[in-house]
Length: 340
Image (tube, rainbow, N blue to C red; front, side, top):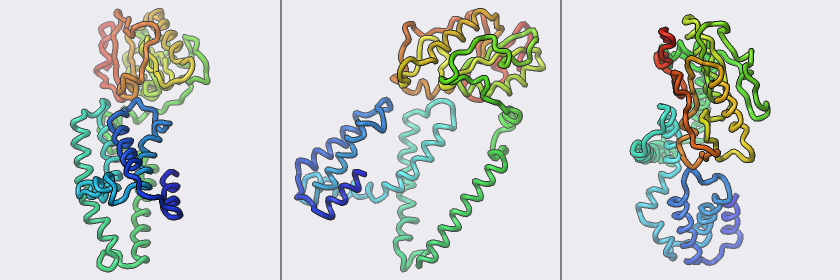
């Protein structure tokens, strides 16, 4: 919207170039680059700083202003030419880097991927964008050929999407052990508590599986824990293990911490207290703690203490702490029996 307003101003009543305002806009962008971090609310009021800074440059800078001369240097012009290609490349590259492992990618890797995005952006600008712009000599010499190529591309993407949907996510892309784990992992959300559900009372009969077996484990965590409970239950069933599911959406299973981004009284705090107390009293042989740890712990500023220091007090129990797909062997040994 700000860009549209700036364009209308430049078309209808362009103001005289103003070096000071243009320089202020440049400094606002530089400030946002170095001062903002992952704890900065976005979008929010803070977003206006770089956005208005850009608008100031668009409206008040030209080739005769200091800011205009700076941004006309070949380096900045080159970055501008490939900027959109870099934007398109960096998003999938960064996304795949983040989901490849359960831990956040190291900064040096992300820097290398940023440089890779720039290289790929230059190649796509040179061999894709430019040929398309040269309509007389490029591969698509008419409007008809452009629409035909676009239609073929959309049809291919649509076909791939339909194939992925009909094949249930293309399961053959997964390693054999992971595919086997998820093959029977159909789960419902009846034991995944949310803020609207209030607080649970345990023991909850509907959330106890393999009931009556001599060994007992608790699966404690967030929605990731809830999604893995059916497969874990199936794996340990042959070893006579009773499973209790204690799960709450977007709730980190750590006593003494909660997510700072939650407004008002966070019901997760009470849930964690109840789960912790129940685990202590129920006499479980082991506790499997599962959560989306990167989301909670990527930024320390996203967490805040709740009266006490976070600590684990299950000193008499085997613990398995994991995120996502756990290695079966990590469930430990209970009363001389291996769960894996």
